[in-house]
Amino acid sequence: MHHFAYTGSNLHCESVDLAAVAQLYGTPTYVYSAATIADNYNRLMQGLHGLDVRVCYAMKANSNIAVLRHFANLGAGFDLVSGGELRRVLAAGADVTGSVFAGVGKSEAEIRLALESRIHAFHVESEPELVRINHVAGKLGVKAPIAFRINPDVDAHTHAKVTTGKAGNKFGIPLAKAEAAYAAAAKCPNIAIRGVQMHIGSQLTSITPFGEAVEKLVPLAAELKQRHNIEYFSIGGGIGIIYKDALASGSREWWTSQPEATRPITPEAYGAALTPLLKPLGLKILLEPGRFLVGNAGVLLSQVEYLKRGQGKNFLILDAAMNDLVRPAMYDSFHQIVPLRRDTTRPAITADIVGPVCESGDCFAKDRDIQQLSEGEHVAFMSAGAYGCTMASRYNSRCMPAEVLVHGATFDLIKARETFDDQIASENIPAFLK
Ligand code: LLP
Image (tube, rainbow, N blue to C red; front, side, top):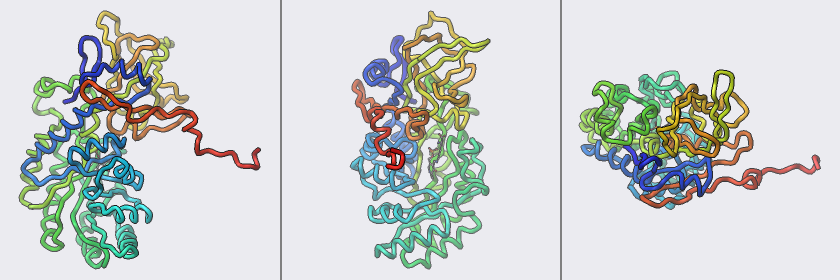
């Protein structure tokens, strides 16, 4: 559920008319709903109320510092994957001591920064990484808290590029080698064993793989509690969201109308399936959701540049491009695209919806039915709050998009559109070329 809906013919986010945002700040602009983020967080916590849970928001999904501050105010910690992300949490005025540091390639500088910032734990992905963390902690004269990421070899049945829990993926330590890894950690003088972690992939649409993976790791977690006195089991992120019926899925009625067998994952069903497996462990449970918390809480606003009538084909050319929202080009993902002003008296057209970037991959949707739109009118890409702005680039020397946060009837600019001067500020022409 979310807070994007038409009031009359105008698409609103909470009580804000999105056309007013486009008018004031131009396009392409990402717009997020603070209420939707809070609802998603609270519903997830409620769904797992039987467990001692902490949510470490996977901030790679959306790392604007205003969004981070909102999560910190809600009580969340953070799942970080770089020194940059750690610095963002600090810049947001949030506490990092409840946060975990994931990723397969942590540098020495990042490990040092994380130790100095007293993060909750490193999620360690290999033995060489363990050795490095032990070494850096020794130099600083501290003990580094760690959990190993264990790869349960479970198929998440999601896009190949976001599957992480299969034996062939670069992530984690194979289950068969877990005990040896923990034994090695126990011998490291500067390591404190704190937990065990898994993350099997992103945009999962079924609870079954989560259950399978948790079931595979529960005996290990119980053993580690006995042997190494671990405190927590992190079950990662990965809960999928609605992309196809994104707008309709804002309402409770849509959810109840979905047939039981194919109903998408809800926090309630997720909690009901996993709580009985996890509760007997008596461990703290960490979750690292990204997409579930922010995905349906954001849209990307864009303006129509041209309606080009090609040979047997229409192209709706927008001012947003693959550099602003790369998911369709990168994962063939579907984003619903809706007009900001709905006009049911107009004919629908079938068009490829594309951006201005000079490659055919810059295509958001093929043969999509959409209300006929003309130059200067606006559309919204639904479910663009996760992995939207954080994956944006400057390809084709386009400036990074603006970001806006809605709160009730008010909205604030949380990231100004990049200017051309910003874009080239760190570039330099060496003397020999002058
Ligand atoms: N924990 C770890 C260790 C992760 O690697 C990830 C995501 C998460 C948690 C959060 O997963 P989520 O709850 O958001 O599914 N750019 C892709 C998604 C990449 C996910 C990477 N890891 C996309 O746009 O679909």
